[in-house]
Image (cartoon, rainbow, N blue to C red; front, side):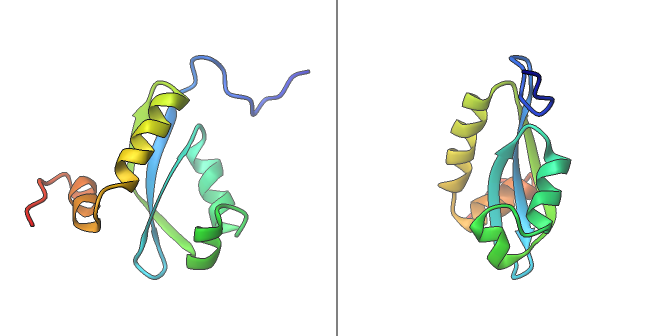
Length: 95
């Protein structure tokens, strides 16, 4: 069976942060960012973006495996909002 959407062993994954309509941030991973963004905007993505509305991608980070991307996603999700904004803007976070 040939599935053109199935990731290969060499597929890169992207950790991304979306800004939602209400200004909140959503973090996720994908191996096809353009397709995933369309899914979010069509209201077929996560529950969170269905409720909040995905506006734009504000940060991306490429990783070599799904495992690494999932670990990085968890790291980012654990950050406080000011730390996420510092990551997005490429500046050190000073609280």
